[in-house]
Figure 1 (tube, rainbow, N blue to C red):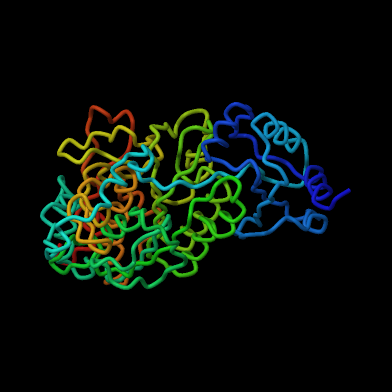
Figure 2: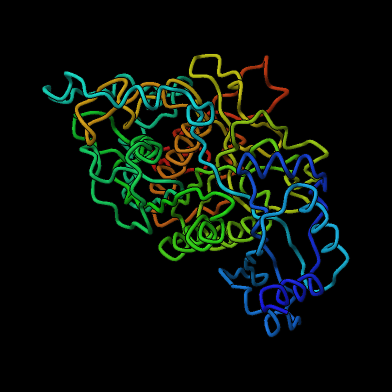
Length: 457
């Protein structure tokens, strides 16, 4: 018998699938496989500490560890269709040595325009007359910088010592970005940054968070923060072993190693959820949940985009995966509201009681794309960045400012303290959609007062 076949049979004998939240339905699995939401060639597994699994299966590769155990991936020698994949999961569910096992969910960025396959992304790549002009300032169009309730109060916070973010580091985990953009300083950390000239996603996120304050283009909420980045190509199901070896878990590991207590980790990704169709918060999957929990246990503020698929995180299909009395990563999960005075839920945002805060999910002015101004690849600006992609960095920016102000006074705020404060302050979500919770828009000044950080009050 060939070694790869023998290895897989040993794996079949030695494993147990985590199936409490997954529906073993061949049609749903096939849908997820064809949409490249999961890999049916790669299994993610967590081994029991007393298992001799590794001694028998050389194909198994450990790719990261958490405080609660060791995880890895196994590449199958076939790509099963939905029916065969369901049968594999059914067989694995009867076996004892593995705590969790499931087909690998593939990360997708939270760019709403990309989700819709909107031609906007391609149309704006045409060179315009803007290349002959100086870049004008667009800060007046960044309504999210204004005082509450229209914005998050960033401009007022800049007048408080530490209020421009100078005492914190931020790392954004997602696809890729243009590190040569004219509005950016040198990144303090780049884990990886694939070549992806048609992707503006990371560029737009960086602009919201940390673009320079130089009267040119946009101004980042925490423009004096040290900004870092780890990007990766979202692999196909045939390439998912590479995706997992150099993808989101590797990125989170690198970020944790380069951040300290009070710093910011932003996750700009979403993954398929329990119904295999709707994209959801990445921590739904246990192997990512454990890493993010480790980050917050170290005092790092973790912020996750809620995702753009109208999914109710309180649905019974999630099996209480977002019930903090059952499991709690300590992260802040961010939904999206409309960019106006009413702040009703943005149509496509995921929602639920676990979502902690909201940012604007439409018509956000930032770097990248080129619809607002296109002076060439390094001088692009947009007025229509959207989704929980635009919402999450607004909340991350608010947290960065408050953490930096606290650090200026020798105070470290814990992730759970920050999350509680975000829920108890801010500009409320509009009442018409309040039943579908996406949270309050942060108010940095209210947060500073909540933590008693204004020394003259």
